[in-house]
Amino acid sequence: MDTLASEFLFEMAIEVGEAAVIGPNAAGERRVVPIRGGRFAGPRMRGRILPLGEDALIIGKGGRTLLDVRIVLETEDGVPIYTRYHGIRTGPAAVMRRLAAGEAVAPEAYYFRTALVFETGDRRYAWLNDLLAIGIGHRPPSGPVYRVFAVL
Image (cartoon, rainbow, N blue to C red; front, side, top):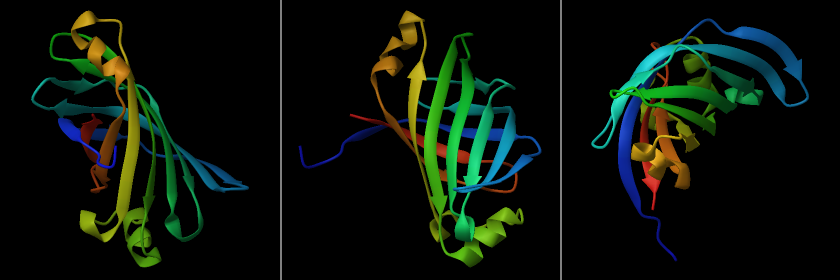
């Protein structure tokens, strides 16, 4: 019980649209970003990210970002998998400003992690319903990219 084991599931790259800036609230600035699509691929599954869903962000002081995301993966064999995750992206204020400006920043310069859960009714992928996954992310100018691991 004192170690954490994992298994690589897939890497996903998400294409996003222009953010709608809702404005400030008690926690920071709310932004909602539409999901435009993307791809995912790994040893047990691969496919595309459907062009629906959203990335609801709270941008706090110094650029600290809390993520609340809903997307739909569609496997190569046509199975939809509802996916939701929460996460945090944070780092030195100067690095976060560069990310916010759309610059390419080395992934090791900031912290970007997510916790994912999946829902599907297809028996071939039902094993996803019973696991928690962790995503290690980075944010190139083209959109977020994650390496996703099942926590065993």
